[in-house]
Image: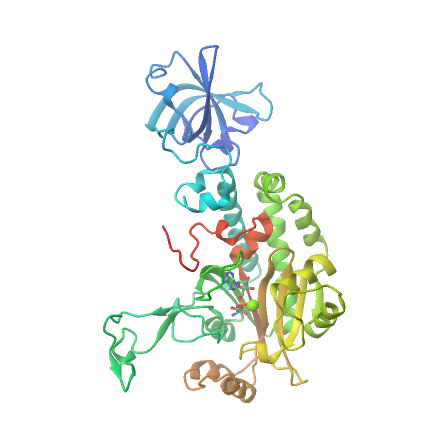
Length: 463
Ligand code: 4AD
Ligand code: MG
C-alpha cells in the first residue's frame, strides 16, 4: 500500500490505487445509506479528499461517528473515480485509525469562517484554516522562486550576521542585544559600561544585511542575502512588522538602471511563478480575499513598470488636486498615502521612483551631480505601497566619508566599509525586497500580520 498525499490522491490517474492517507478531518457528514463522508485535509492542497467510511467498519460506532473538525486520522482504502462534482476521485476506506479526537465543545475552529483578527489569537491553530494554509503554500512558493531566480542568474547566496554593531539604515530603530543585568547596569563616567557586555560594545539585531552583502559583492560579483531582519520602529500599521524577512541582492558593476531592470524582472518572475505554481490557492484568494487579484498580477507581469524621478512625482502630487492628510513638498519623504495615490490612482501599475533628496536617504546612497539628490529607488505597488527599497551605492571614498559626517556617523566605526572604497572600489548597486510585503501583494491579504506565521509587533510577541 502506497502513502499518498491528498494532492496526489485527488488526481484522476490515482483511481484504482490502494492507498494510505493521513491528515485532519475538516467535516463529517452521515448518510442515511449506512456510511459517513469525511473531508480529509493534509495541507498538500486547499481541497480535501472525500473519504467514504462504511458503517460496517469495526470502529464505526465507537470512533468514526465521533470524528469532527480537527480530529486526526490515518485512512487506508481504495481510491476510486468519483461520481461527485468538483473531484476526480474519492477514497473508500477499509480502515480508519483515529489518532486524536478534537472535542467539538472546545475546539476553536468550528465555524466555517472566522475573522482574521480572531485567528491572530490562535497562531497555533490558524494554519489549519483554508486561508492560512493557502498563505503558507504561497509564501513557500515565493521563497522558492526567489532562490531559483538568483541561482539561475549566477548569484551566490551569502549569510550576513544577525547580531551586528552597525546601524545600516542609520535610523536608530534597532533592538539592543545584551547580557547585562538590566536591574544593575554597570556604569563608567555616568554612561553604560559596554566593555562589561557580552560583545564588549553596544550590539543590535540587524536591520539589513546590505553592508555585509556589499563586502561579498565587492569580491564575488553578484550575491544575495535572504533572512530575518528586525526594526524597533513603533509603527502599528498593516504593513509593518518588528521582525520580517528581507531579500537583498547586491551587484558589483551595476548602476541604478541595471538595478531597476533586475528588480523589475525579479518581481515579475515571482508573480508569474505564483500564478502558475499556486493556481488553486490563487483562485481561492481571488474569490475570497481580493477580487481580481489574479488579473492584477497578470497585468503586472505583462506590462512595463513606470520609472519616475522623485521630483516629477512631487509635481504630479501637488498638481493632483487630491487632498492628502500630509502635505507634499520637495525634500520631505513621501507618505504611504502619496505612494498609494501614484501607484493606485495616477498610474494604476507599479512605479519605480528614483533620485530622492539626499537629506532623507541613508549615507550609503550615491550622490548625483546636482548636489541635491541620490541614486535611490523605491518600487511602489498598489495596496501595499513600497515593496522594494534600493540604490546605487556611493563608491567614492571622499564623498562617502563626507556623507557619514553629515549624518553624524563615525567613519572610524565603519572603517571596514570604507576599506571597500579604499581598495579596488567599483560602482555597485542593490535593493531589498520585504518578503511579507511581496506575499501581501500576491495574496491580497490586507494585514501583514496574516502573511507571517508568528507576527512580532509592538506590544505582542505571543507564541
Ligand atoms: O527600504 P528599506 O529600509 O531598505 C533597506 O533596508 C536597504 N538596506 C535595502 C538594500 O538596499 N539592500 O527596506 C527594504 C524593504 C522595504 O521596501 C519593505 O518592503 C521592507 O523591506 N520593509 C519592511 N517590511 C515589513 N515590516 C517593516 N517594518 C519593514 N521595513 C522595511
Ligand atoms: Mg525604504
